[in-house]
Image (tube, rainbow, N blue to C red; front, side):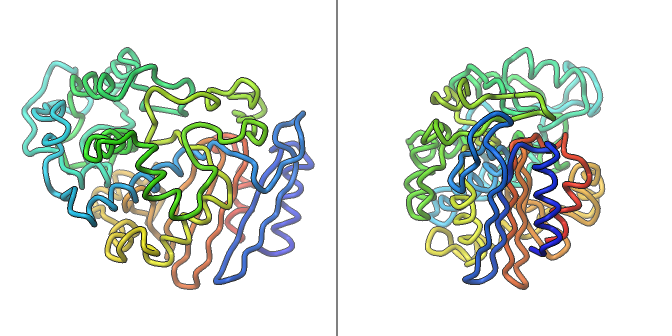
Length: 359
């Protein structure tokens, strides 16, 4: 990171755009970290090991967990998920994507593990108002920030999800981000373990990610989350202080900058004993067709596709967390860039995005 970029980030803290931020840039054996500001606008100073709600950084972690099972032949990419998720055994699809929910046709093929990983199962963040309203009525909480949590247990969540029609045929369209929610339930059922337990055994502990989980490891280090300058989830009364009934595999994890850096370094190293190099290559390769990329351009941006839990384009892969985090890896020169803030990313000023792009 250049000195000008560091000064710009400091200005965002000094001017109150964000209460604090942590930036990390690494290349090879060199890692530079800047810790600026406070854990909340009226709180203690931010620490390098402060805990952030990393939101959609959860997606690549859960995708990696699924690829552990693929490596071990406990999951097959093109097997129907209905073998483990019978709630999705007989999906029906809207006759028209913007049509009424009772006008459906049978799915042309089963939903597969690959469909979940690539967000092409046929459900996701929808522009069909009736479908979004039905999801809200069912308390599935698949859209927007994970606040408040769904009150449902995983089996009941899946039962209710299975009553919905798909908006598109399996494999037809990229839709953020219901595939990750479903993938978390699939992993738990295949392994016979709670999702967090499997993540801890196969991802967090091998990588030394001691502070990552669905509950704040140390409440004293938890930051406050904001939408703009308005508190969304305060550290003292956070929903992340208690275990969730439904571990949100799309956006529910708490982590630190060093924990998440350990995960990104694992991917850059080709798996580092956690995943096979082939699994990492699949995760970080664009899986979308040109038509699917074009349909998703408003969400992903120009010339950007999707791997498994990560966007891919411009010689980089990575993703953003809606509650204020940003990550990219450039494999060609081995540069990893991570920015963690407490301000919801959709309320960031363009200047903050521009500062991040100068790394």
